[in-house]
Length: 212
Figure 1: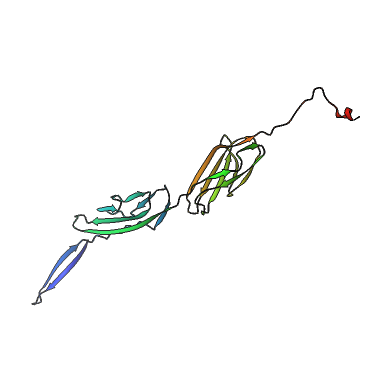
Figure 2 (figure 1 turned 30 degrees about the horizontal axis):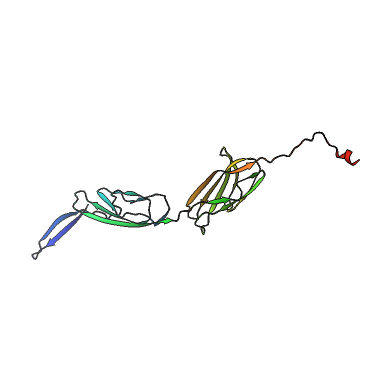
């Protein structure tokens, strides 16, 4: 509270003083921060960043809390009203923030060969979208028990599979904006044991005897 002294001097030079108390309520200043971007299906909490007594909040979403959860893009507007203790004076403030949504990547790939004898050379071809995106790649080829057999960060890597077995192929992609997607192809790769040719002849034949 602030007190002011009012002085009145009449035509006869008489002076009259009175003290007038004035209650000053600060104007609220909510701060929603800078405009932001989200990946699809991500969420974020918008904070009013203003917490004074006798304050009410109204978002353009219809919420009346100081914080709200956001899952979609658009413009978010907050009105704040702060009153004095006797509710005889109310001051207002507002802020706006824009929330954008990045395109969601979709991981996809094909395999040059999914079955063959060891050692089997395969190449993985990335078909993730959007095609113009600059992805960071994480490829993994996993044993049946889930342990790592091979890995690469190339776009279309080549692997030489030495051991027979059934393998799962995994691709994880991340865009420059940090949006990610993954794809497993479970038990997609089958590498078989290389056959060994053997035979027996009965009776035994000696080529040496035939030519001598």
